[in-house]
Length: 178
Image (cartoon, rainbow, N blue to C red; front, side):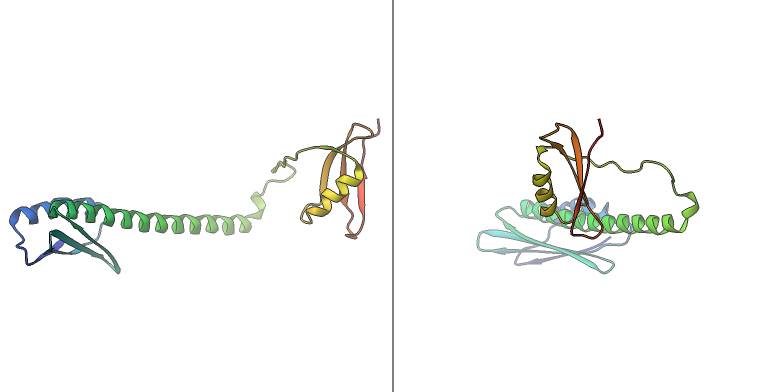
């Protein structure tokens, strides 16, 4: 890790350099590659300003904070940089994970001889409410994506299923016999 510390209207002492190097170890643990770090410290009015810029490969992370204490300003910058890096790493990991799942799906469609057949592979749960067949038809019309709707028929007190017939205009009802 190469670190360049610049002081504007403020001298970068050995204590400050050691402190910055110690704090940058928190950032260094996230990368295997070489870090290029620029630290600028300066004073404006009564505040000490620390600006830290970390460059890794093509990515640059930057934080600037002002505080009455220079060490507190450096700490705050490190916290900000660590948050930025963690966020970037999480997004990168998600992208890699999504990509691998897509690869698995593609491979799964290619290996059709290993597909499961003649098994129950999905279970859907429906809330069954007491209503008339006409009310069930209206409820099914509210949700055009649904093909069927189970309900308890108020007149018979039995579970029925209303479904759309393939013509898309009419409905059918399934009732138990006994």
